[in-house]
Amino acid sequence: MGGSSRSSTSSPANGLLLCGSGTTGCHGWTESHPAEATFLGWRVTQFDDPTDVPVWRTTPLGGEWVLLDDNGGASPAPDSALAALAALHAEHLTRRSA
Image (cartoon, rainbow, N blue to C red; front, side, top):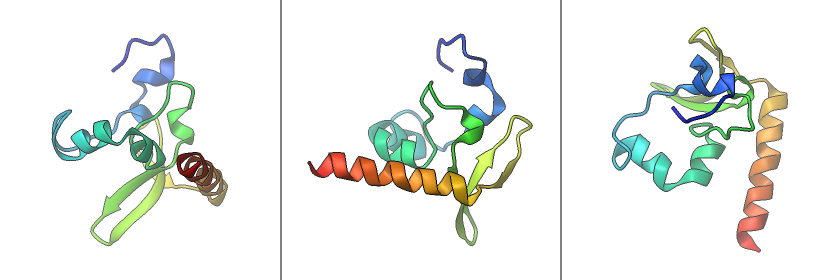
């Protein structure tokens, strides 16, 4: 993980297992598509608390938005977190089309 003095940088909630390497699989896609990966919660900026960032997790039944915790668990993301995520996505789309 990165060279940061922030304790959240090396917290369990900031660790997400992705298939592939930095150029292949989900890890490669994340590196090649940073804006989309950030929207999915697969990349977290150093300014965000990873326990507050909704993460899209695929499941056998499709997928779900969850919040990761520092105990290695996940819980359903609350509507308030998803509303904030939707607002950020709309802002990103507006900037992208300008």
